[in-house]
Length: 213
Image (tube, helix red, strand yellow):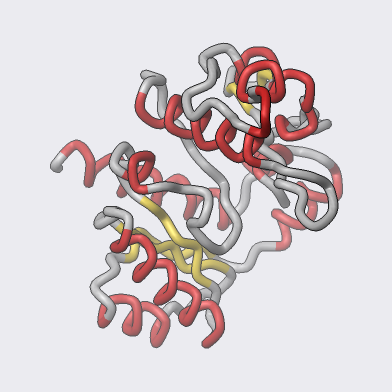
């Protein structure tokens, strides 16, 4: 289940990286040069959509590689967009990323209040967390938190995370209601179940931490 379907959005908007004319217009320059600070303050409204609960949603997309030509303007465009939404937008911003932080530069990372890693009960997942923690520290992300997923017994996983100095916000149990929600195209919150209740508790814990309670 991706973020869009979790929000109850039936069809994801077109990825921003596919707006090639817009990217070239805003970030491209002659002689293969590109602008480091293109205009991006209207991109989410232009390229995104509004979810059922009023959440603004956009898909960044991926950068092509190989023989597709120079992607420097697109890379500069996405980095500028990330900087804008993190540092300029007054709303809460959630970035749903792949298992890594290559998307974030040092300047962007300074605006991130916290990075939450979703950890599954397995060695490879824990190794990925170690890598993310190391990379995050290199670019200035110091507030790394974890959520343990798909288990009723966080046990040894929680112990290993705490040994790494990573606080655990909570645990989400394996819940077939999430599978049902995904297959039916419904937001999990509209289906309910133990996992949704756990996520609500995690949200409350996150708010408590930032409010200093």
